[in-house]
Amino acid sequence: MPHSVHPIDRMLLQNKAWAFERVQSDPSFFKRLSSTQKPEVLWIGCSDSRVPANEITNTGPGEIFVHRNVANLVRPGDVNSSSVLEYAIGMVKVRSVVVVGHRGCGGIRASMASFDGLPATLADWLGSIREVYAKNAAELDALPEGDARENALLGHVVRTQVENLAKMDVVKRHWAERQAPSLHGMVYSTADGRLVELCRVLPSATAPVAAAS
Ligand SMILES: [Zn+2]
Image 1: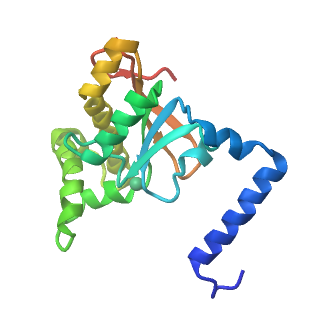
Image 2: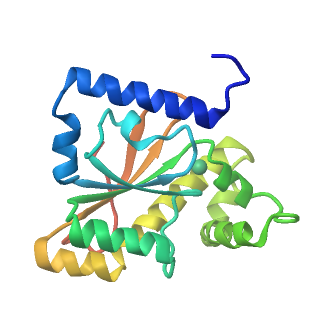
């Protein structure tokens, strides 16, 4: 396609081709999807374009309820993620919630650099990653600068979001009512496409436990 085609025009054209191909291979595809959605998983991931929830888990439309933001944060008091959680856990009744961080995350990297010149909203958002760093500074400062330190911080950030989830009212309510959802922290590697589970909290547990490998 020539470079002069506007990206939105190209997107609309590709959507047309996709919808056509779907109906060709499965005539009742859209009819089936229109009637209901019953995904079992809520995915909380980074907005990064390299981490598309459905594609990297080989799932299709209707299978994963998705919320994405910069650096996959679940911050207490954030109306956006809180309403997603209320809806997905309370109404859709997902069985599991996964927080997915990824290697090479721009949000994690930016939180470790100077905030000078950064828009205030972004500095505020990334500030909660700095809090995670501060809590684990002894361990992180001892690591060599670069990938090792960044990946260790990423792991702590993901675990902290899972801990935040475990403290939320909607989660505790549904643990008591229906013993769900389970909570999972994962890291995706953009280098080899693999998703690895870091921690898992089952409804009866009170603290994250290491995931079985
Ligand atoms: Zn990211």
